Image (tube, rainbow, N blue to C red; front, side, top):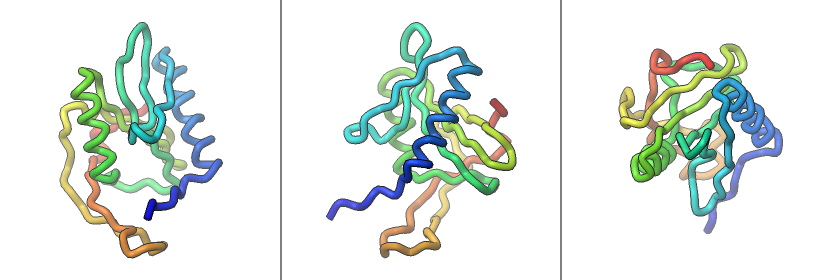
Length: 138
């Protein structure tokens, strides 16, 4: 059984706002990657491709930031294969937009995160922790 997507139209709009903000700040263009086959959100380019990026919007700030291990793995492996950078971009409602370069795959440990909504038994997953100190303000 294929798992249902839980991304709302508002989530998609928020993500596009964030990537637009990044493109303005970094003078680049963004291309949304098709899912499937790609599990990474965006490719950023100037004259040629420069980076792959995963974009997240969070209401609450928490440190460390947690991202699914599968997402982190897809992002860093895709970037390594292509010889590009791997970026995680997060907009926290109370802190604004920040980004971390995770090209080298470094992180601050693995945690188990259980979704409190408990829609399905499989709603928990291993996550990569990234300390807030690794992020830079956009």
